[in-house]
Length: 492
Image (tube, rainbow, N blue to C red; front, side):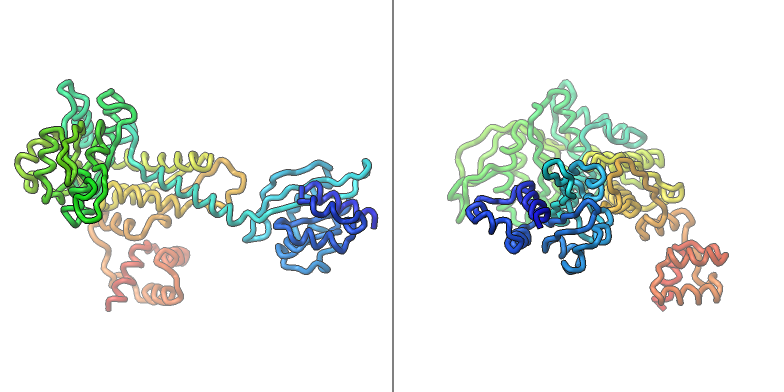
């Protein structure tokens, strides 16, 4: 009885449970085993106490809830029956504390545990653990790290050294540097190209190069706005030029985008949609002054304007506005127009970017390897949304091949292999269509194979799994042909 009381007292003081109230009680009541379990059952942490043989002599309600057992089923039994990876076993052996040990042995629960040896007058009596459920906290941290990775993967490139300098792009980058790096001073410019060809990326590159050569200050602003978001021309004018209080019902004093970009770059994406306020834009560019909506005072501005569009701005803008903005006009070619070498450089860039993002977020050396078939499919695929889509498909494929966070454990060096099975089906199919011209007719599949495909599909197997099963049976039928056949069958 005395030894049990010593153990419980040690738990309370080692865990730093609030004892100011308890000390007001009589010594007899404080040591009473009728009171202490009630106290320990009210705390938010789990508590386990074992003797020198690893036999449980006390468990509180939190610990019981973790195992899904009853107290009477646990007491008197080895702790390893309920917690096979119990840190207490190490403490019993070494007689030293183990602190902040993360455990994930009772799926799906995760907890962090602190374990201590129990001594009384130099006599070793056993050990105790105090542990907390960190599943929600761990999930939140994982989500935050995933967001960090996604931000790093999708953010625009930081400088010219991180992008392709080959073929069709070489002249574009050279021209881009001249926009802000020529002796005649920085110029306004226009960037055109299909969606996803990298217009925003190029604008960011110009901005960073301008800072690098000292044309703008290191803390100069880069203000980006998608002009297509404005359906009301009055709101658009207010956002771009600002407003004063009372300019219209409910209006407030507000800085416009020109003022926010003063000393830096204003990037107008989808600029072909600004037709309703082209005159105001032209005046601001020509005079270097803007006037907030509803104000009579003019404000000096020093802004480099870059207009980007998927349209031909020569056909959309006022001639005077086009002349002022189009001092430098750059066209970004689609992926279809670029060489295989350029595509491979982009491919390698996005893979490295993924590896670096994992390192920055998780401090894990991540090595991504693509099989020759997977790499060939990605480089020869048709990407209607160009670079952005290629980047997203590469990221998706790596995601599909990556291990789960909970399976990584304490590893800091991981290699993953990306195969055809990890690439989204539609891109792989387009790759094969481009390579072979067209998919083979469905009627070339023999009857017995056709029957097998239909039967397996009805049982829930996908094209890839069916193709794998056919390969095991001695039939060489790629999954895209299986998918094509099933698609034809569903249409009939």
